[in-house]
Image: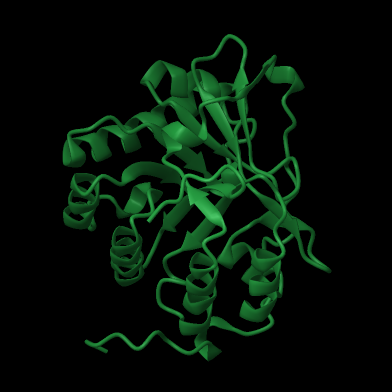
Length: 267
């Protein structure tokens, strides 16, 4: 249940699905049970094989967006970006019969060509790497009818900054306990929390961290439209851009195959 309390942290929950339908179903069931609105980003390559669950999640009211995870779209041509976004959008909309309003590329990379292509295709929101620490920021570039969601960004000791996200922190050597410490010590007024289905959706210790955090009731979870109501409006050239990616090769403290699985009843 959402609590409308101005003293709480305002939050947007974001699910990334690339490879675990079981983890996606697990997360969707939990968020629906807790009445937490969420944006669910599905990899463009998974659309056809997951068409039934995409349709079901859309019907339940989740915001479904598309992801291009082949490579980051920094400095790719307008034509290339337009065609990639168009293909993903058309596939999604043939399944959901609703507009696809949210898009991201690998590493949440974007540039002006992404904005131009997205606007042409009716995409309203672009996900971007964090630029203001753990505080999430929503930008509205002047001259574009697109909003940029700069996600929460947190450091690790040895591998730079990255999203407030299970996989991002796992790749940078953070354990579930370390992730829990980060979450419980958040002091920002506005955050975007990310979960990846192949990690927290199916791995017990990572799943439990999110559950403990939910149970603190510190977050007023918002829909994407509510979360982005008051963007910072400025020229696109002045909007901070984060291209730092130091963890292209994951260096986890605990390998994924050593993490205990969630005890699903059908396992």
